[in-house]
Amino acid sequence: MKVDFLEDEMVVARLPRIILLTTVALLATGFAAGVAWWQTGNPVWIRFVFSYPGALFFVATSAVQLWLSFRCARLFSVGDLLRPAWVLIALSALARLAGDIIRLFAMTSRLNPLLLFPGEFTRAVMVKAAEYGPLLNPVYMLFLAFGLLYVLRACRQNGIVGRLAGADIVLIGLVVAYTVNFFAGAVFAPGVAAPGRTVQKILSWTSDPLLCILLFQAILIRRSASNMGWGLIARCWLSFTAAIFATSVGDIGLWAWSRGYLPHSLQAASWFVWFLASAAYAVGPAYQLRAMLHATVPDDASTVSEELEMA
Amino acid sequence: MPRHTEDANNSGGSRRRKQMKQLQLFASNYIPGIHPGMENLIRWADGERLPGVERHLARCARCRHHAQLLRSATASANQALAGSESAAAPHVKRVFENLQLQMKTWCSLRALSESRVGEPRQAPRIAGALAFYFGKEAARRIEHSARWDDGDACLIPATKPLFSAFLGKKAADALAHKLAGAAS
View: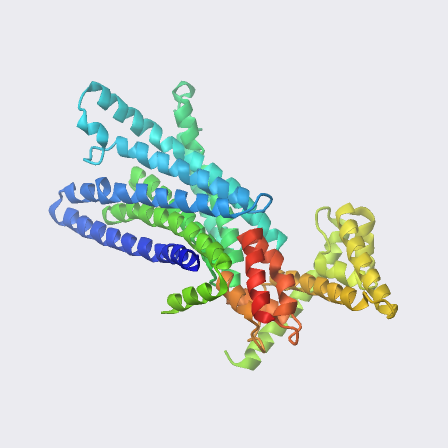
């Protein structure tokens, strides 16, 4: 029984390191592909990275986040303050995973099973997948924002809510300015016709305001968690903060790229930020689950686990 | 950082904190939604005369409820201590002390973002658990608010709500059981 407990905890304990190493390997591959693209002018390598290892990485990290978040939610009892938070985070991971799988169906990659059946129907499904896949972004953000509200409530109840520093206000101000600029240019601009506003388009517009809310919550949680030190629970919420921050950077990068504000060399770098965001989303629940398993492990087994961690 | 510099920083931090508390107390009299804070309520419940708190309590039902709970806990503990013939007196005293410690723990965590504290004088086992789950600074804060001679036995009930909030009731119970077992 003790061995089972310990094995389970050790598997979860190794996950952040495995995810980190995989991310580093993927970024190194991406960097090499970026250099090859820059040297030869042929984007085939960079496309390969995003269509194969990149696509797999997004699906795998979302699946890991979903699995770990559901396990965390199940370990909380009914009535625990953070149980709804983890249910919502798991639903957010489910929306991310669904979005990643739908996006995979839109890719011209051998990983896409639709390509096994070429034809008009497949092409139509791929077009629809490209259209509807991104719509799950605001869904996952909405679930996450509600989940983080519970976390902030727990911080407030325990008297550990941090305070915003000047740099935080500047950062939030920048993202809000970007959102206002986006809405001024894409939604309220005189040339944008109202009949062109489909439900999909309106849903996709909600991503940026939701990201502002998420960033505000994430910074508050970061201030609260980092003031405590670097314990497992603090690391869990710091990972979510890093993921939300990376998502903001990636979103702004995409906007700057579409407007031509980004130099050629930074374009690819802004795409790689999405790998960091995905990795951080998966690492957060791993720390939380490890903390919960460690607390319930029998005493002598938990000492062994701490010793293994030190080693 | 040299010890005296750290002490100077801490005293500066605590002075600022005191000024902020006074400002909060002042603002709570005039601005709806601003409350005098748990520390001021504890001082009021302990019998300190704080006209600002009294004015706020006259119009804020939530703080009035908290203050009444605090005052009734203080009163019943004092009553039990006064009647030393009661067999339950030591138990009530213990409960009261734990309640006070829990309040101090809450207040000490609340000040986490304001200043850092020096090294603790001793490290009970729960300090290791706090550092493992939350971080070293949280552990230091709580240790500083504790009674050193009682160690884990005193800190476990005080820190349990924090573990319960972030790890869940089941995990917090298991952890408290483990720590209590090690302490006994």
